[in-house]
Image (tube, rainbow, N blue to C red):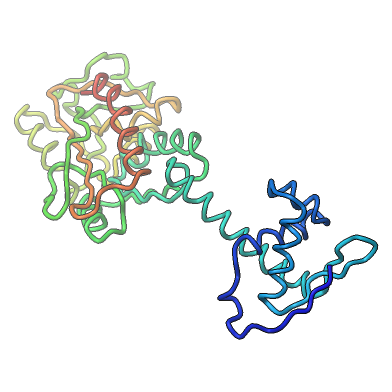
Length: 313
């Protein structure tokens, strides 16, 4: 195909998408006939589009050699640039499709530690298996910091204790369970179905540290029941209390969220009376609705809470 090309001062502004597609198809397939098949048109149409494209851009793209179009060096350079653009557009289209279907994106969840290292970890793992294109970042911090993260937009969702100030966020009940009593499976109390406060009189105990949210409620309960536990360890994290109990340091009153992952390792988890409720809330931003991924994850969270509520509520 011979053509006399003249430079057009308007340059790229004269480009027509059909001409670019015809050029790309010829470069991919090698002939105008095969390019026509790729674009579901005819060979004369492809030849006309290529001729117009060369004229518009002022560059000779093909030499006719033995009835075959041979790309010029300029054509190969241009084709490489066009391919990068097409790959970029295809990636954009793929990302849009994945976002529409909830199969791409990143979700940041702030959670109080015992829930974050317990149920949330297994819920997130199951969610990722269904949607491998998604990334989930879990931040386990105190409930007050979680609220600030949601307000500032650093976290998409927050799971925190009900006792905190919820000004500036949407807060909805997530789950309420009762405190459980944990000890090593070989402990003398491990054979009981229910542990009562009086069972802990004089028993070595691991208790929440004085600056933790649960310290006051546990201390008040023992005072009401007129029980004096033998405190051997104080710590601020439920998971630490469970590990210490598992290693035989003593008995602990913790949330079931922290205890359940360690049952297979030999931690005995027992109901405790009187009940000490633990309430968690789900926090989202006031001014920004949850993303599609966040909304699906919230639905999964609520589904996962039902068995916890039935067993430990």
